[in-house]
Length: 260
Ligand code: COA
Image (cartoon, rainbow, N blue to C red; front, side):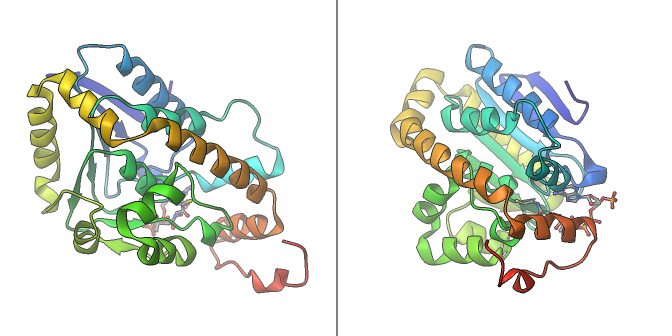
C-alpha cells in the first residue's frame, strides 16, 4: 500500500489518482504495485464499469522515478518489479480506461495513454517519451503502438529525440479525444467516464477486445522488457542517471570510446 495512489469508486467509475505532487507524481515501485492491484481487482468487480486515471497537482506524471531506475541499474533495488504487472494490467484491461492529463506526461505517463480508450488533455498538456535521453528504450508496447497511432516519422522523433508534443499537436495526431481548458479537465473526463459507465458493459468490453489485441501487446512488452533491462545496466544509462541526480545534462560523447 502507498499513500501516493488514491483509489475511489463511485457510480461505476474507479478513479486512480497518482498523488505524489512534490515529486511531480514520479512513479515508484510501490505506486505501480498499488495501481496494478487496483486494476487486477477491477477485472473481477462487476461494480467497476470504467477506470479513470489522473494525477494530482500541476502534472500528470514525470514518469518512472529516476532514482529507482538508478537503484535497479546498480542492483541496489531487489524484489518484485510491479511496473511489469501494471503494464500488463493496462494491456489486458477489459474495462474502458479514461485519462485526464494536465501538464507533463513523461515516459510511462505518455505510453500509458496509448492503452487508454478516451484521453482528455488540458490545454497545457505536454507529452514526451524521453527513454533514449535516459539511454533506455520505449516500453509498455509503445514501440508498436506509437508508430501505429501517429506514424513512424512522428513516433521516431518522439522516441529518439525525446521531444515533447503539445496538446494541440497530440490531439491532431490522434493521441487524444479532447483538449479542454485546465479548469474543465476533471469535469470533462468524469463526464465521458460517466457516459461510458451507462453504456452496456458487455458490448463495451467486447468492442474493446475486438479493437485491441492483448496477446500481440504482451509479446511486444516482453521483447521491450528484455532490452530495457539490458540497457539499464549500460555505461550510457549510468551517465544519464548520475546526470539527473547532479542536475546537469548528460555527456554521452565522453563514452564514445567505451563499449555501450
Ligand atoms: N524521478 C524522480 N524524481 C523526480 C522525477 C522523476 N522522474 N521527476 C521529478 N522529480 C523530482 C525532482 O527531482 C524534484 O525533487 P526535489 O524537489 O527533491 O529536488 C521534484 O520532483 C520537482 O522536480 P523539478 O525537476 O524541480 O520540476 P520541474 O517542474 O522543474 O521539471 C520535469 C519537471 C518533469 C520536466 C523534470 O522533473 C524532469 O525532467 N524529470 C525527469 C523526467 C524523466 O526523465 N522521467 C523518466 C522518463 S523515462
